[in-house]
View 1 (cartoon, rainbow, N blue to C red):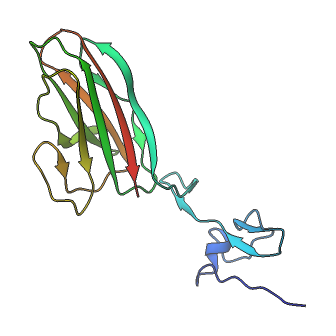
View 2 (tube, rainbow, N blue to C red; view 1 turned 30 degrees about the horizontal axis):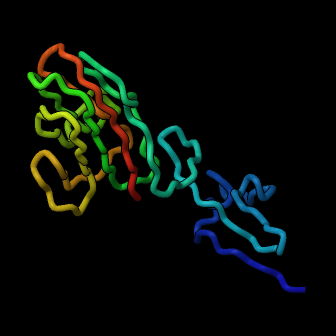
Length: 177
């Protein structure tokens, strides 16, 4: 009989939780055995609330769906699990040509619940324009286009308009590991 042993971490508590007692079952230890009898350790990150979160690969999300808007708007807050950065794509499809719109990627300070600017676009005043805003550590910073910063845990996109005329735009994001 062949016995398979998995070394997940040099710390006993990595398999058992907070104390040093062994996990009582595979579910508790985040281990899985496949149909061939191979043991797999599932990787998770712990959030501030100590809830395990599975690691994620690159993924695309809708920040603001395409719609006509006449006022400033903030997207909902997004929780970054393990991505290092984001590429936000803005697509302006209708513009009154007398006003401009600015898109800002913001991080949130969880202690004060206030937002701070990571990157702000230049004022866009042209119809049928698609532009990308990049926040990623190690990039060469480019004014109003690229920020050499990591993406914080909580972030959003804020949109401001120069006046009350209607703009039609959408905002998407690609989260990058």
